[in-house]
Amino acid sequence: MKSIRLLGNLYCLLLLGLMNSCSSNDAEYTPIPQSPVQCDLTQVPYAKLSDYRFFDGELKNLTPAIGVLPYQPSSELFTDYALKKRFVWMPNNTKATYVSDREVLDLPVGAALIKVFYYNTVMPGLTTKIIETRVMIRKSSGWIFAEYIWNPEQTEAFLETASTSRTLTIQQGSETLTFNYRTPNTTVECNRCHGDLVTQQKTPIGIKPQNLNWNYSGTQNQLTQWINAGYLEANLPSSITTVPNYNNTALPVTERVRAYFDANCAHCHRTGGEAQVHPLRMEYTDTSDPENMGVGVGALHTLPGYNGRIVQPNNVGQSILHYRMQTTTDMFYIMPAIGRSVQHREGVQLVEQWINSF
Image (cartoon, rainbow, N blue to C red; front, top):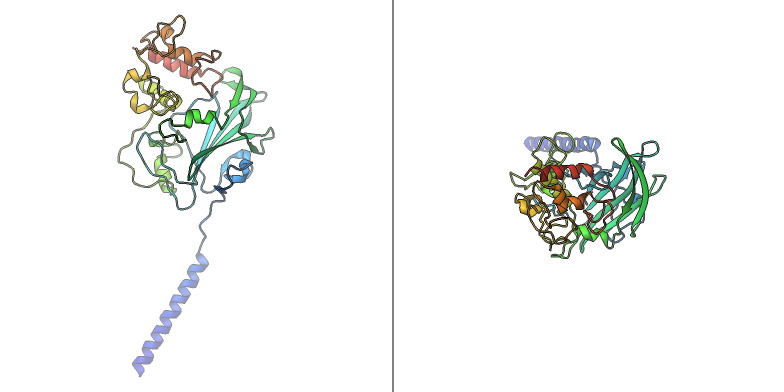
């Protein structure tokens, strides 16, 4: 009987200890922060940018909410010298998956990509002005586009499907530039860059592993940041191609120009792109062959005064590609065909240097 009572007392002490332990853990428990983002696929696109709750505090500060992850490709598309901020958000317990170095990450249904276009040298006064925010959202049926135009007060951005335009004057280096800034028509123009003629699907452009495989902020690779944030499966290959930054003057000119073409031209000049009938193939992995960049290749469109070559080695004045990049008035020949009103002087100079290097 004594042994039974002893066992009973030990059991009670053990049970009391477990209860005290649970009580202590409950007192120390900290709830996991939840993202405030709202992205109801039956309701999007919302009428206002603020409806998504992508940003905390004043909207114009673009402070990402919990779960909204900033990112940046290694080389950026030129858009009339606009600065850009990019963010990604995904629903709880969902992740992107790797497909290949050159293909965009396969994001889950419900994911959103946010791209903000702004200037910080708007005249007069060198003020900061946000112009537009583009949102891509993946539904079960595919990606949709949503274009938001910011009001003059910079307090809100409103859904707009038609193209808009405004005159801007900015300070760019030592120059003052005045130009007409256009936003795209989401029912037509967005498809020109994001559509695929082979799959008949819309797709993002910048979130390829080869574009994210670098340290954007801090010392951590962006792909690692996505994995640590729970936004990417941790099954990447041991080695991933990296598209360099075309602004890095320490790199060979050929590497820089390949990166430039990949960022600014490849979304159309690829299989499935709007310009797939053209001989150019401008994706980074294709341009190790100079012919894919037009070197010595005949152009589809002749140009008075030119001998018909896309790129005439060591001859800028006979290279149609150079003319199409530098013109701002010849709308039949201007390249890129949309998204550019002014000449990207640094890009033109890079291409000139490359052509003259042969």
